[in-house]
View 1: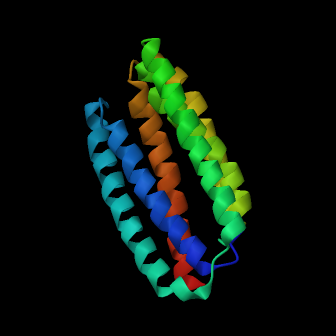
View 2: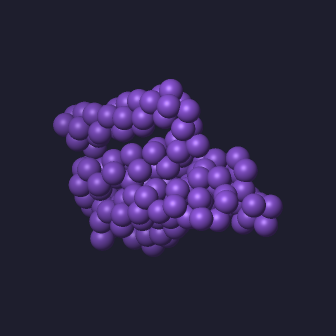
Length: 177
């Protein structure tokens, strides 16, 4: 379940914490009023997870990493494709006047891109997070429509906690390994 290098686990904690914070923020576009304290708490916990991940990565910086010239290039291609596909989809949704679906689209792309990321890093937990984010992106719009809530609120309120849990687990793993 754990990656070979503690530094990679710690950086994963920081990255997941950062993006969890972003999703909690996106959820605050127009959520139900009663969700706000939860979303704010999630944002704060996410920032603390980023800080823990950065500190742990710094402590283990010389311990090694899976990233070499080849894996770095492959990772860059995967992330570049993620940004391109997410951006293109967002533009197409805007042109079709369906920007309300952008958060779900971006979450879907993020979830799918995490599968090759998990393989590159060799960190099994990322597969679990990939499944969770992908599933959240697929159920968010129907849930939002059935409850009269904006899709961004539902996507952010589901994707944020999934990434935060992955970040916290990674931070704990990096701290105790």
